[in-house]
Image (cartoon, rainbow, N blue to C red; front, side, top):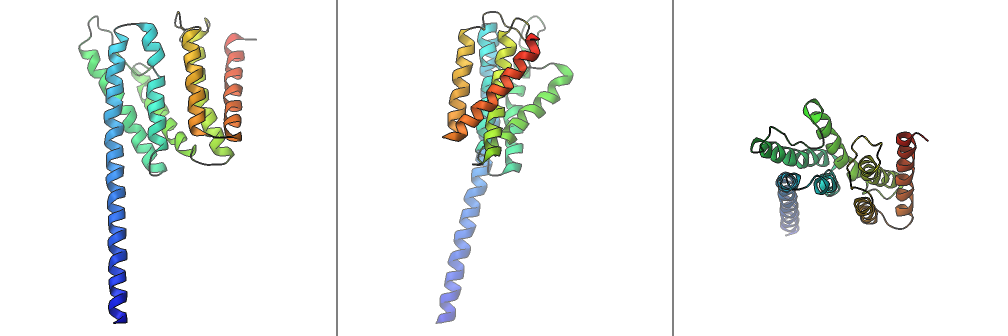
Length: 219
């Protein structure tokens, strides 16, 4: 009787472990599919905005894409899956933008903040943001640093577009669009960190933005 009980318990544990693994695998596959499809949807919407207004597209790109990659990377099952799903989340908008370029008149091509040879760099950079966002799940200083670097990426792009001496200056981006980016960065940090961690991450963003401002303006 004792032997039968042990066998029954073993079967129950094996079945429970099998079902748990199956649910995890299904969740990972769903996460991959949603990462790719979501990226394509964002890219398609960006293509529509690019044909309407340069200012609207400047507000949308790259913030929507980077934010999506951050969400994908943070919710991944592991660091390896974060790398893969972040790459898929980056491929999605690139494919949509390239497809939209075929139907555009005037020979102008759409790209994810890059052209030609820099496309691979853009893909690698965005995918690395997803991996970096996975580290924001840590509750230590490394998590604070990762969150601050991600917030600093948004700040740097906003400064590029707002400053007249910036390499990607967009007329009319200052001040309202900059305020929107500041609100986005604040919300992002609140989502990624809590308490003192939020303050440390905000300090990292401030250091990155201040350093870049001095570099660009040449003070």
